Structure formats: structure tokens, C-alpha cells
Length: 314
Image (cartoon, rainbow, N blue to C red; front, side, top):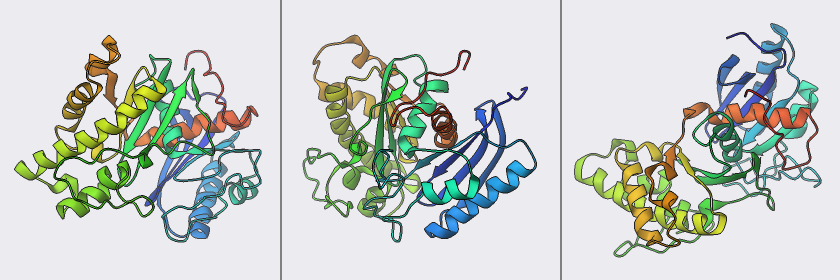
């Protein structure tokens, strides 16, 4: 594909790895790199070094968009903009992510959570490109969600934490949960670490009856959480991603269980359609592709929490 004249930088900062890219969309990725997430200084230095090297061999980027794990202060009008809040990742609470990158790269730095970045990408190029409002839910090391309406993420204080909602405990389940803050919230009961702690092994290694039991329990907790999200935000679609979402049989069971828990209310046809809960279309690149959109936002100086209208033909 012929490259466009404008290129952006995208960063997905995760708890174990960082994905960096230069380009403008899924069909225009001009450079891509994966780096380990180490301590804050080492990680940010490695990101800056990669961009400096990559852009030295090509045109400079107009801006860089960072999609980062959280919780993080995403409001540009706050003194703590760009700093992580009380994250469970050791050594990262309070770290400034935006300032060092802006100083090192000398371009505008846009910021969203990793789930919002992925949501924006799925909305422009992926599984939600044909709907006006949707929720993206990632189920992996943690559980997080981002809501998008009219091509714009719904802002918050500082952002949504859908994985930390309370869910009804399933009968005969006495598992305490793994969330260090709430114990048995949705993330504490249904994230990847919860599966490992509950079953004594990662979800992807479970087989036969143990896999079937794990999938059924996952579907029940996730459907309970999604019921609240569906009733509060009324999305036209739910897009699910993350490693846990790829467990064999989980998506069909989640769809069926969500229909059961909605119990026919309010009775709209969309909730009965398998297309209402759809898997990601962009795979593991959604977060870094969302970084391109966040960078575009930063380059055009959009207000905090507002993503620009996609260019014609995107």
C-alpha cells in the first residue's frame, strides 16, 4: 500500500510488554517493535530510543499517541496529567509517562488508557466500525473497558474502571478473588490471574471437564458484569478481547448467558443477535493502532477526552 504523507507514532504500554509502531493505520504500519516492560525509567528510555532510531531512517512523526495501562490521569487540565495513579504494578504508581516522552521526542504526546486506545481502533477499522456506540471489554491480566459514542471516548474522572464493578457471587463459589483492592470484583473473579488462582493453572492450559467448568463460570461472571454495562450505557455492540476472551467456547457461552441474564428486558432485537457481542477484529495490534488515533488527536489539539472525526476514507 502506498504510504500517506502523515505518519504518527503509537505506543501500547502494557504490564509485561510494550508495542511501538509508526504509521497511520492497519494497512500502513511502517515500523513495529515489541519491548519488555521493565521499571519506568528503563522502559521509557527504551521507547524513546526506538522512536529516535526509527524516525532517523524515515520521516519524523507528527505526534505520538500513548495507550497505557492504568489507572492513569488522562485529563489534560489536571496537574497530574500523564501520571499513573494507584496501580497494582510494583514500582509504577505515580510515574510520569507523558513528560519524559515529550521531552525526549519533541512532539505532542496524546494519552488514553490501553482499553480506550483499542476501542478507538476497533471503532475506526475493526469490529465496531459500523455502529455509532459500543463498549470494548478486554479480559486478560486485568479486566478493563472503554465506551465510545459518535467516534469519541466517553470521558470520566479520570476514566472508566469497568472491571472493578461488583458482581453477584455465583452459587457454591467461595473463591476469595484476586483483586488487591476489592477482592471479589469482576476483575478479581474473572481475570486471567483469577483463573490461574482458582484452577491452579492458566486458562489456556485447561482441558476437558476443567476447561468446560472454567468457561461456564467465566461466562456467568462476565455476563453479570455486561448486564450492568448494557443497562447503564446502552451500547449498540460489545467487543471483547484479551487472552481470556480467546478460551475455546467462551464467546458462545457468554452470548447465551448474557441473553439469559437480560431476561428479555427491554426486549430489543439487538440483544438477541450473536453480532451484539463480537470478538476483536484487530487482534493484538488494536492498542497500538489506537495510539495512531490518539496521536492524531494530540496533533490537531482536540480538547481533552475528545477524539477527532476520522478522515474521509479511513
